Length: 129
Image (tube, rainbow, N blue to C red; front, side, top):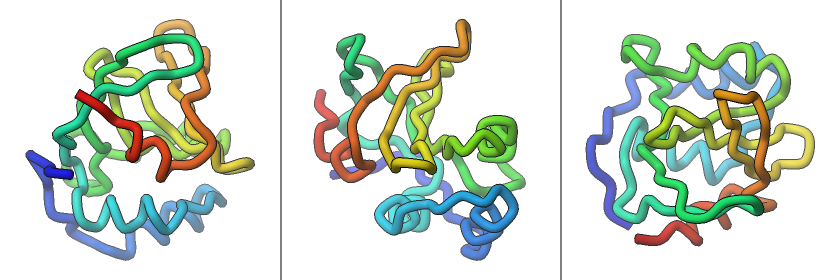
């Protein structure tokens, strides 16, 4: 898959810092994506949830503290055991549930969650245009 607007990760230890600070475990697959494509936008951007169709992914959340929009903005979700890793065009967050590693969509306007799939790999494999 092609990626655009990638921001090189400034500090590879930031992923371990987030895991330790918020007591979460980021799957290896996602760690590799963040390391290669931090803040980037995949060419395939549409995805479905169990409740809705054709949501539009804006891109990965940056793990660089210096970037205006970054993972630390979502500290409250991290404290709840949700690992946000991508954002939609409408500001909703795609996240991993630290407890069972499933992927969900956090709808920020009404603070509800829609399940997407059981694994982060499956999320990226099923993105479409």
